[in-house]
Length: 511
Image (cartoon, rainbow, N blue to C red; front, top):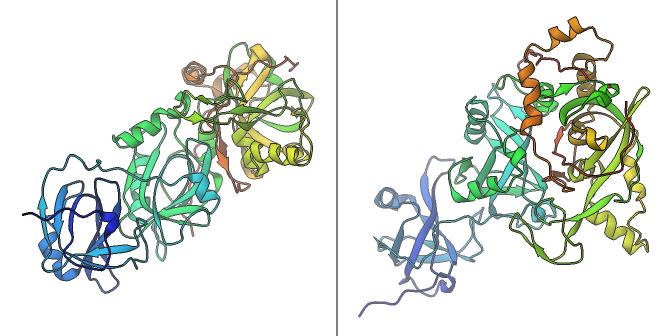
């Protein structure tokens, strides 16, 4: 007569004769400060319940070469203790410890779910809904690199990036030592272009940001696994093709790496021109300019629209549940920023459309929060602009926009209000309309590169593209976003030139 299999959820310290049918979801080695190594792993049964397992140093040689990640097996016998791991990977209150009498037999068990990940919601991280001793799985697209510290005497490698989820939430992610080096190697490889999706297991969460654990974390970058490929497929088409940029701050902390500066990435494949040249543009064109936000352009659309809770697509009906094209089942569409605003430079003026990500980055508040606050205060007219929106005005910024001459407007793709960043673009890249044709020819050696952006960009309807929500933005962060075509009332504008070639900056070693 064989013993029955026990459920993981029933494991307690009442006995040691446990019999478990499980899949090894993850296994990793831990070396303490005395150089003593032990193994830890997570196992899961057919009901999806998990428990953390410890194999002590004195049993290491017996099991290290036997245990394989993702294998299914029967485990007999083990001690059970309270889960006192400093960092916990699951919610089980107990941990299972291998004994000298523990046995394990590899066996095919079809009823146990395959290896998977348990991703932590970025919104919960930002709201502080995390256990301080819990390690989490994280997945997101890198929207920006905001700090790079190279391996110099007295300093360890650390890369700080901004990760964005499919709902538009953004968190900081710090990659230390081998994890940071792995990311840099991938980022600097010229063969790797387009979006970067990161999957980080066993991430430590603290104060709204995450970092790799010193033991156990795995970093997967754009790998061919279902989770990453599914995430990548749900990004907007043009966002899948754009490589993340470096902030000006990250460049000052880096002594090597990419051949392009943040400014060079900002202007890449765009026509740099003064605002006065916009009226000469006949086709949708990607441009970079410097302008100051002047006043709101009030239209029948107001300052927000109702959209999907995951992506930024417009909801077909703000009062009805629906299934979005991104696969999200939306019970109640949420307000998202979409603000028309006049910008000026000298005597020239043009209408820009700022989307959810830019507005949240500057305001530090979502449209949903602002709208709900107004309703709570008795104001339910959607055409009333909240006072907080005034923070968007009278700001001199560098803009990367898609000019849409059909609608006499420009949809903002990226912006930056860092004074030094704006000054460099204004002084070194903007081509004024009074330059001679000879000067212009010198500035634009490769006309083909200047036209590719308009051919590869995508716009459809009145949908704000996938958003970046930086809950605690800093002044020197370049905020990336892509706008899409919107049929607003036309407004006048004022003239077209070329773009300046990439300027090579000397990168000084960090002190």
